[in-house]
Image 1 (cartoon, rainbow, N blue to C red):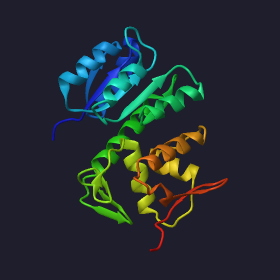
Image 2 (image 1 turned 90 degrees about the vertical axis):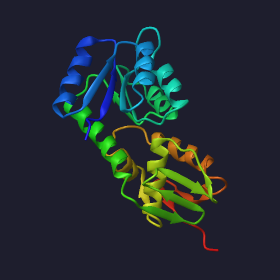
Image 3 (image 1 turned 60 degrees about the vertical axis):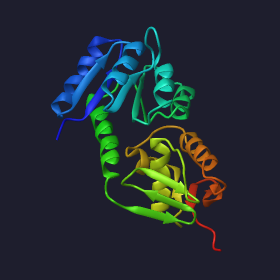
Length: 227
C-alpha cells in the first residue's frame, strides 16, 4: 500500500522540516510548499493528497484564501496552523471547512496524533456500512448521504457529525462529548464551534433539520419524529 500523501504548507522552512520529520517517521509521504500560491500548484498537480497542514499567515496568498480555493472543489481534510489565538479566527476556519485548528507553538507529537485521528476516520469510512434514520441514508463506504433519496453535499466534518448523531439516536450528547468524539481529541475552545457546525448541517438537511434537537445548556439529541 502506498504511503498517504500529506501537503505541509508554511513559509518557515524550519517549521516545515519539523513537521515533515515527524510525519516521515510515521511513514507518510510529505510534500511541501512555502507559500499559498505554491500550495495550490502542488495540490492541483498531485491530485491524491490525503490531508493538508496549512499555515494561516503566508506571503502571496494566506491560508484562508488557499482554504477557500481548495474547498471549491475538494473536501480533503485541512488542519490550520496559526500563531494567533483569536477565537474569531478559529470560528472562521471552521466556517470555511477546516477540520482541525492548532495554535502555534504546538507539540509535533500532538499534531501527528491529530493527523492520524483524521486519517483513521477517513479510512474507517470504508467499513461497508449503511445507516438509516427517517429520511436520511448514510453510505459510509461511499462517503455519501442521501436525504429523501437525493444526494446532499456535506463537508468532511459535517458528514462525520451527522453520522455521529445518527449512530447515537435518542441519546443526549453534550457539546464536550460531541467535540471529543467527532474531533477525536480534548477540545479546549468555545462551544460555538459545535453550534456553528450544527447550524450549517441543519440548513443542508432538506427540511429535516429538526431531527437535531437542541438541549439548552447542554448540547444536542438526534431524534426522528414518529409518524
